[in-house]
Length: 427
Image (tube, rainbow, N blue to C red; front, side):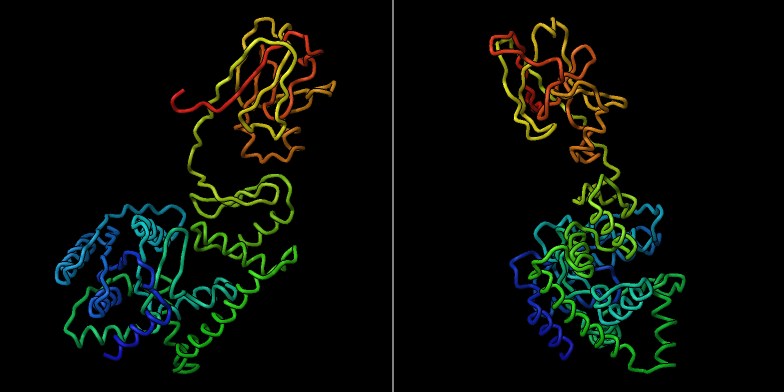
């Protein structure tokens, strides 16, 4: 009962389930997640079990799934099971499995995902992050409640040890399944668990885990203070420590949960430089795009859809002025010499290598790439800017200017009014 009471206090003190959302418990069949499900059941907290079959351990993975289905049936709670298809390309298997779980959990909309991380996981995480050179935010460990993109994760067992959970299950006659990969010392976390921590406890102090957890609590309080400073800071540029923290928070909000120190420093350097466009690869599918100091994240595997426009022309007199708010901002309109068009067809396309253009008021052509650079148009946007051509000559960049030599001389001059807009799905 002491364990149940402690977890109940943790749930209440950190308001883990205070929001009116569906509660989803990730259950692998191991002791920790089975204990979490049974404890929440004992505390009369309604939930749905979520199990991801990683298909990494042949028949053992299927046996895990069967065990979890039986557990859900015994507790009479809903269960959702999904089969994973993990492809390991240039990343650790552990990382790929973690991404698969997050993707699975993301399928539960407006839900709280309860995970079975415990105190021993915290200590192991401390050493893993320490080895990677993490700062205060990383060393304070996992949070009781955390949001990563659209995911809302909670960890009710962070103040319990693995041995306490196993003891509680045993005393209540409950079973679980052992994952044989937990004994594989080629996995770094397992090496810390089975070799490094026992050695340090023997050579330094048997209270090592307790002391590490206390240090993490201190760091967590300092981390909270740093975040408060960040919210109240009004001077710019921000100090380097706050720049790093701001960037990490932004990455977390955009679903990037793990980024190395060197990557953070590279992004900050490019952001402060505020020139041109650069890319920083985060993993095999995502990258940060730094465009003149502004950041965005894009999926580097997605191929953008080709742009589609609708060009309308009407004969008239005089001119209609373009809005001039920026190249490619539509709808846009302008007027060019009707006589110079001479019945030749007009076309719309995007930038091609070697394109040159003489903006109205300039006697000579310039490379269009150089014009876009001067206008500080991000490189990734240049390929989507429409160009209007007459007989292979660029005569108008919508939202910017018409070409020199194509202008209307007087309000009574015959003209061709151009109107360009994005083509709708029904057009």
